[in-house]
Length: 214
Length: 214
View 1 (tube, rainbow over the protein chains, first blue to last red):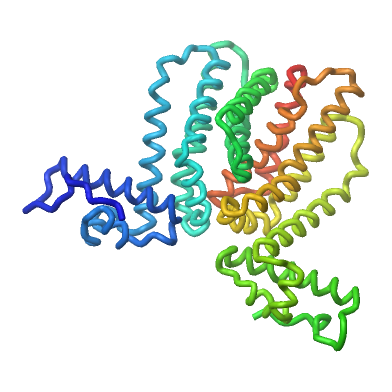
View 2 (cartoon, one colour; view 1 turned 90 degrees about the vertical axis):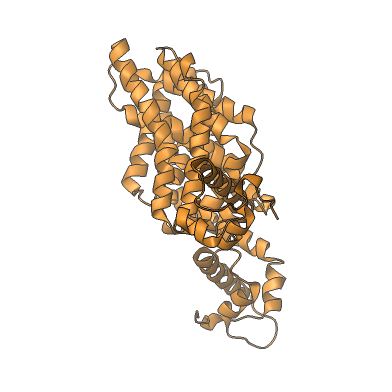
C-alpha cells in the first residue's frame, strides 16, 4: 500500500489552509495512480481514503462521489499539462504557420505523456456512463485545442487580410488528425514521440498549403 | 436468455457442412451481442455456449480462447462493413477527388453504425492486454482505409502526371482526421451522421486544395 504523507498526520482542531491544500493534493495524486492502474470500477472511495490516510468522511466532504473525484483528477491532470504548455507561449510570433506548429507540438507533447494513455483507457470505460464527465473533459482538452487554433486562424485572417470561410473546420481537422492518429496508433502500442510529431508537422504542411480554401 | 436457433438443434452424428456453418454464424452473432452489451470481461465462454445452445467443448473446438472468439467476432463485423462498402465500388471514376470522397463516405457510413461505438468501447478495455488482437483490428480497419487511399493517391499521381512525395502521409491525415473526430465527438455522445459527413468532406476539401504539397 502507499505510505501516508507526513503532512497529513491528524492534528487537533481544524486543519490549517496549507494542510487542507496538502490533503487535496495528495488525494488527487493517490486517486489518479489508483484509477489509472486499476480502472474506475476497481477503485473504491474507501481504498482511496485509506491510501491517503484520511477518513472516508473527510474524502466525501471534498468529493461527493467517485465520479466527482475522477472528474477532479482529470481536470487536475489537464491543468498540469496546460500549465506546462503555456510556459512556451512567449515564443509565439504573428506568423500563423509558426503558431499552428507551436500548438500542434504542445498537443503532441501532452499526448505522449505516459499518464495520458492510462487516462484514456480509464476514461473510455466510463465515459458513456458519465456524459457530464465526458463533456467536461472534452471541453478542457479537445475543444480547448480547437478554440486556440480557431482563434489564431481568425486573427491571422484579419492580420494578413486573407479571408477565412470556416476557421473552426480547419482547426477541427488539425486537432482530430493529430488526436486520431494518437488514438489509432497507440491502440497497437507502438507510437513514438517522433512519429506523432512527424504526423502533426505533415498535417500542418497540408493545412497551410490549403490556406486559400480555409 | 436468448432463444436457441432451430437450425442448431442437436442431431445424431457429424453435423452437415451447412449446419456447421449455421452454428458458426450463430456463435458469432450471440457472442457479439454479449461482448458489446456487457464488455469482454463480463462474458464467460460458458455463457456464450449456453446462449447458442451448444456445449462448451463445441465452442472451444471452434474458438480456442475468449480472446480468439472476440477476434473472430471483430473480423466478422469488419468483413460485413467492408462487403457493404464494396457494393458501391463500381461507381468509382478515375478522378482522385471523387475517389477520396467516396472512400471517406464509406468510412463515415461504417463509423456511424450503432454497433461500432459498442465495439470501440469493448475493444478499448482489452486492447492493451491483447496486443495481437489490437494489431489485427488495426490492420483490417484503420490501416486498410489508409492503404486504399494511399494506393489511389499514387495511381492518380501517375495518371495525372502530378508527382507525390508522401502519399501515405496524406492518406494518414485524412483517415486520422475522420476517425479522430468520430472518437472525440462520440465521447460526449452527440455525433450525428451529418456532422461526421460534413467533417469528412471538409477534410477532403483541405487535402485536395493542398495537392501541390502532397
